[in-house]
Image 1 (cartoon, rainbow, N blue to C red):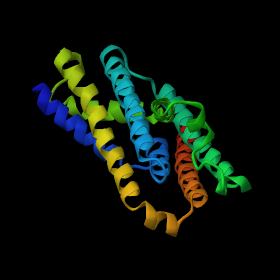
Image 2: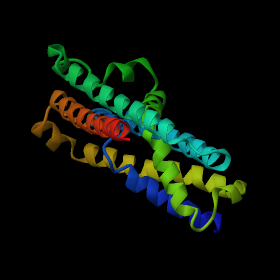
Image 3: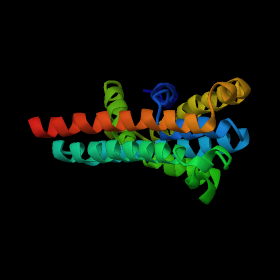
Image 4: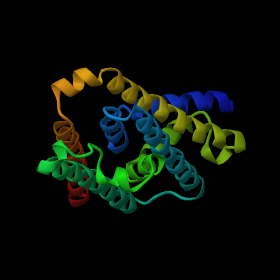
Length: 216
């Protein structure tokens, strides 16, 4: 398979996969309500872990296979982290002073926007399994073991570009309609909604993985 074709497949998969609400697009949407430029910088930082996890997936599929038990442990860890992010959002939304305070979470105020995005993205360990699955699918056309540097660059660049396009679209939409959104929902309610969604998403994944481990 030509690297450009692989790049297109990976970029498309990354863009579609990023439509799922997660830590990065959650913080991007919250930030875009008040600071569009900062939201774009968070988007840049948030897409870098896509390449990092894609690289780990390439190395893993090339050198060794993750055992069933190890996969369950990493799934549990990733699900737990997403749930913790959600709880963190909910707790912050319940603080009375947040209505008048800066609407960005504490993590965003302690780090640069790019680092903030990177930290939110790197916490999503399930990206490793996402990319392992995608690369496993593309192995129908070309095995990971047969990659040359051009293929590796195509995968890493495609993973970043696809995620950036989707997260940028989220930021642009929220910024474009921020007046309407702010009239419809306050930043505190936005935090709470995102937190509930992340908690439910992470919690359900955690429960499913625990049940799988127990039944197996």
